[in-house]
Length: 308
Image 1 (cartoon, one colour):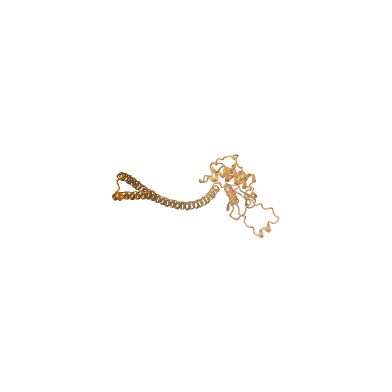
Image 2 (image 1 turned 120 degrees about the vertical axis):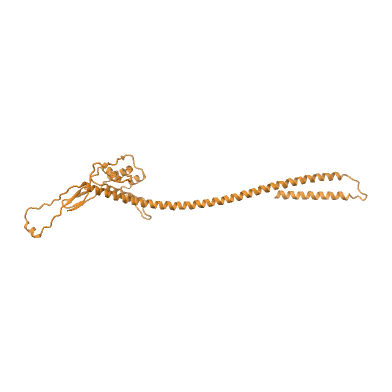
């Protein structure tokens, strides 16, 4: 015997050999299919076999569990997402026409979170739920009849060839679970590759950020050095200002002393008797000249300090 496994929920058979077909969903069914998948995204937790039972819950709610398998539903969803992404974000230089695809609007609303609240929330089917399983049909080999024998039975009664089938649900259920596991493993691999690429992008961005932080630290250190230089120059200016104030005070004291000396000389230069030839006393003229020179010197020194 030669055995072939077929899912009766997605396969029809004629009387001679099995012919597999895929159920064609209507526009309304596809819209409900998209809404239910997005609304019940929490059922697809990524754990083992959760995707299978979630898809089965959706198909049972839509009454399509006798028409499609969970694997076909998953592939249908992936094809819808792929078509939507190609229209939403086409390659550079490629012109697309999203309005030509009847499901673009519902997919766009689903991906952008704009779906209405009419879609029900479902619960994942229990593992013991009575759900249509994949059946196993056996096909008999028909022995070849020699041509000489065919001549002897010509005109005789018509020979009817029938196919007998039995079910082995346990074996086919294991095959279905293995297919689902393979599908989930492929999804996990693709997600892992995406995560690795995102991690590489994050590492590059972190390296750029580290370089920017290092540049900021260098600029901060430079600003701190300039600030220290300014503080030192400010302290130097303060000391020079104190010294300048001291010099001004000394000039003021010298001016006061000069004023007192000048007053004393003026008192001494009271009208005296002139000499017979009408000239002043030579010592008095000398003191007056010295006083004038001191006063001029102090005036010049005070102007110098003010200009400084």
